[in-house]
Each structure stands twice: as structure tokens, then as C-alpha cells.
Image 1: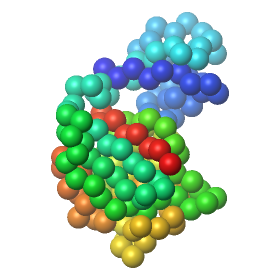
Image 2: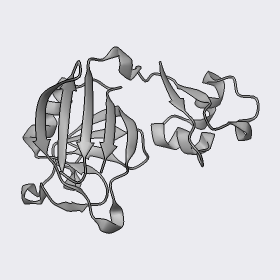
Image 3: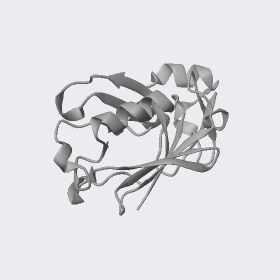
Length: 165
């Protein structure tokens, strides 16, 4: 199972929202007697989410280069062009994991949505392919539909995603 390390400013409630896990489930899974007393650096088990160390895949995103690079066993498999968040809606920087996949999510999200362990953010397709390579999204990582479908077929839930400038 996946272990989230509590960061400054996080609460058990915000962690439950980021991972889309019911608050009560997190409390039970971690035998927490006082949910208001979690500490920075504490490991919180996220039920039903595989440990990223159990998959050979990882993803690195460069918001400045506007690329998403897929690795297998630390070797580059493929680099894809992406769109990132605009100035007022920047793509979050940090380390996340893919927590679910939803084909055909509708709206502007193209043909595939993969949620990140950060509330409201994901890697998704687009119904506006000319936006790829630009800073135009509301913070998500936008890919060509055929690329996000290929990525979703390759990486399992629990894959680590490192986003850097």
C-alpha cells in the first residue's frame, strides 16, 4: 500500500480530498485516535493505492519545457509534448501518484483522464490539440488524445509523477 508523507499545511481532511479517499476510511486505516494531531513527516497509509516502488514506470513532467517523459526502470521510454497551466493557474510542482483513470470523461478533457494525488489535477487529453505546447490549462497536464491513451495503457495506477519547472 501507498504511504503519503505529511507535508507542512496538510490536514487529514486535505489528504483525504487529494487522494479521493473518504475521511473516515483514512482514520480507520491508520488507527488515528485524534485526526487533528497528524504531524509533518508522518506516514499516512492510503488504502487500495499500490506503492509506486512496485511498478517499473515513472513519469517526469517539465513545465518549462512542456514535456512529459515516461521512464521504465529509470530509462527513457518516450517524451511527449504537453500543455501546462497558465500563469494564474499554474501546474502544481511536486511529487504525486496516479490514483485513477477514467476513459471518455467528456468536456474539454479529451478521451482519457488520469487523476493525480492532488485534488482537481490530472493528466488528460484535449478537444483542442492546437493548445499542446502552450501554457493554457487550469493547471492540469494536457496531452494529445492518442498520447494520453497510450500512456494510460502503459502505466498502472500508483505510478509516480514528478512535476518540476
